[in-house]
Length: 343
Ligand code: PHE
Image (cartoon, rainbow, N blue to C red; front, side, top):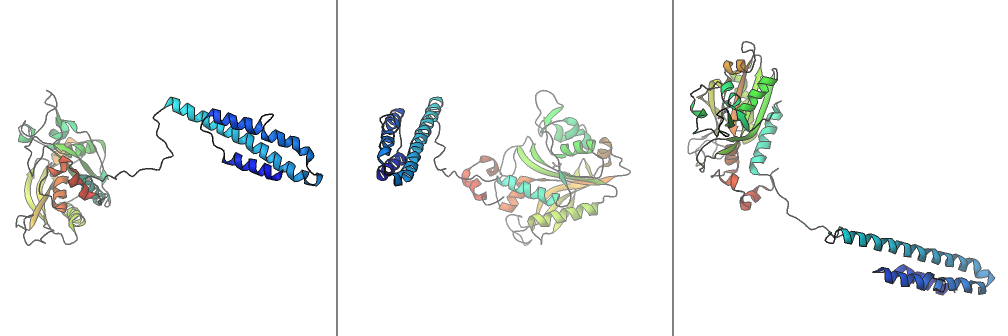
């Protein structure tokens, strides 16, 4: 009898049903009044008294197991049929996952993040602002005279018919907003996308990216700016890098300068990247014009500051030796895949 019970238990263990019908015939065969298990209970009377305890236990175990199995398969078939009705094309979530290729950061994002981190390490905080701006924040507050050529149609994209609303031509507009809303000391950098109505070529684009910086406090000098920019240049291009400041002009800084870095490729000896000059121009900078401070309600007698601005594309072209700026915007995977290791 024990053998019979064990055989039925094994059968019940192995049993699977693909539909209700199969399950029902299993139930009838095992558990109905005339099924295998109740008839074993009938035969139980004939078992030797000294075996009754063991046989009784095994028999109860079998009955319970078979009943549970029927219930479990019943519930399984029910949920399967509900899911199937609701979403016939539902993906099988138990399938092993497939591999999809991992994307990578765009080289301009990689370089922007590096620039941000270098300045964040010396206490600059990131500020962002709108790409569609008014004349005040792009030009007027920054001391651009009424007739300045940057304001006219050749350089600026105006939005609609309103001559007051345009796409920002630099992220200095963000710094005007910071100065209007915060009290010095101010130490901020503004990364972002800017727009200029220029013909697209290997060296220029109508959309590009900048990081501009601003530092305002009591007693800030040109020497502070030079030290900060030397630190940046060495962090970005390597420890040996030298900088050179050449006099320049911007409406919002006085004095103004353009900064060159020694060519990191030829070490200053001369190559095609630096056009045999040994120097590469990377940014504009200068002491914030007192008019700009006053326009933003900052006391120019008490406070002074410096500002600088650079194009991210230009820095990326130097670091990665890219000769054509248009590559950044074409999204050619053969180009982008070369930066998968960068973070
Ligand atoms: N805003 C200038 C530009 O877009 C760069 C700049 C910033 C120059 C700060 C000087 C000081 O070209």
